[in-house]
Length: 339
Ligand code: 13P
Image (cartoon, rainbow, N blue to C red; front, side):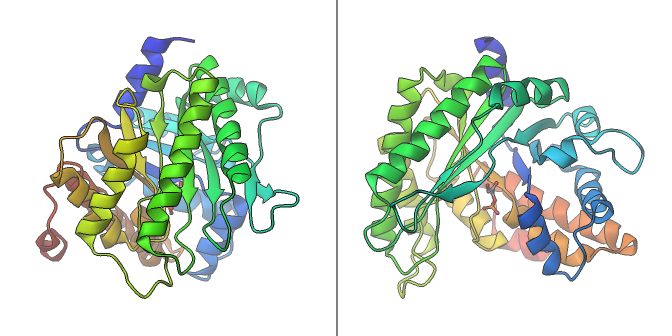
C-alpha cells in the first residue's frame, strides 16, 4: 500500500471547486433511468449516453472523478478511446463501483446488507490495470418501524471496512458510502439520530480494519426529512443538522466528504451543499458525488437522440458548474436563471 499515493488521489477527488460524477448505474438502475425517457437500455444506448456525459466540453473544470460501472470501464467512447483513458486525458480520475448490490438480511425484515467481498482482491487488481484510481461501495440503510437495527448497521459497516481495506491494499482509494434512505415519513430529527449511529458504527469498523483515514473519502447522505413527512426541513436546517451529525462522527483526518443526492432535486442538492460550505471552514472538504442531481436534467434533454447531444451537454455542464460554485458557498439561485 502506498499511503502517499492514496492520499494524493483522495485529495484530488475533493480538490477545491470540484466534485465527483457518479455514473455507475447498475444494469437495473440504468434501465429505470432509460425507462423514464422511453429508450431501451441497450449496450449502444448506454455507451452513447455515457459518451455524451464524459465528452461534455469543460466539465473537467468542475468534475474531479467519475465513478463507472464494470461495463463502462471496459467500453470505448465513440472515437474508439477507452472511457477510462478519455477521462484521464481530461484530467478526470476514473473510478469503479465494486459492490454487487444489497440482499435481504435473514431474520431482519426490511433490512439489507451489501454483497461483493468474495473475489474482490482479484477484481481490484484487474480494475487497477484498467485504469481505476478509486472505488465505491454503497450500503443501504432504511428508516422504519424498529429499523435500522444494530445488526444491520454492524453488518454493513463491517462489509464497508473489509472493502476499504482491500482497496487500500491495491492502492485504490475507497469511497465509503453508507446511504440512509430518505424514503419514509420519519422526521429530520429521526434521520439525524440514525445517520449519527450509522456513521459511528461505520467508523468503528473502519478503525478495526486499520483503514488509513487520509486515503479514503466518505460518501454519506444528507440529514433530511423523510420524503413523506409533513414537515419538510428548509435548506439552513438540513445544512446545520448534517454538519452537526458529521462533526460528531467523522474524524478530521478524512480528507473529504462527498455527498450523494439520494433523490433530492438537482437544485435542492446544490442549495444544500452551498449552505454547508457557507457555514465553513470545516475539518474536511465538503463536496458532491451526485448521480441523479447531476444527470437528470441532461438525461431529459438528451432523450436518446444524437441531435440533442450538444444541448444535453450544455445542461450537464451547467449543473456541474452550479455544484462547483456550491463547493465554495458562492452559488446563488440567480445563477440558475442567468443561464
Ligand atoms: P444519487 O446521487 O442519485 O443518490 O446517486 C449517488 C450514488 O452513487 C448512489 O450510490
